[in-house]
Image 1 (cartoon, helix red, strand yellow):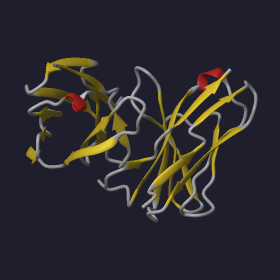
Image 2 (tube, rainbow over the protein chains, first blue to last red):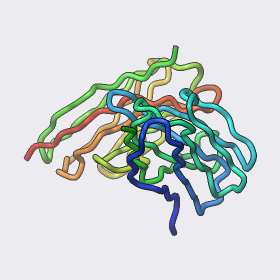
Image 3 (cartoon, each protein chain N blue to C red):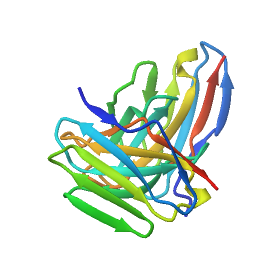
Length: 113
Length: 109
């Protein structure tokens, strides 16, 4: 049972470059999420998706783009990386949005230099 | 605004009991979650409370009082492996999860 996997796990990139973080889940969960986690902050929602081809902004969407052409994949793209986007990024999924447990991927550590 | 408050850090002794508190102010309430996160790893689900009262699951228990906007996570018979951050999250009226910054729990022998 692969669950939810992210790639790359670790990435160093330069300011201004485009970066895509991949997320794949094998549970056929409807909902998928992208969070960032920074010291001193709780998990902050970047974007989420209720189903294929349905995406919506979260708390901190600026500078990020998502797509969801297939239920199992939910890539996150930083169009032009900035140092403030250095963070740990977690992809997550759940069956639905109404009180169901959210399951997290292992995380992607991104450093923008 | 929406807010989740929990202590930044707590220290406890192996074998003892520790209570981690979480207070919240959110737009509506559709349940409260506790997650455990070891350093460098992903958060993992511990408990979910939607009704008032205590939910017990082995060494871990979670309590909720909706009228007080308050929850706690109780960890008994502490083990060194319980050293981790504990995240409190509330699902608001729009079914969005609002996360606290987490409580880092340090267990000493």
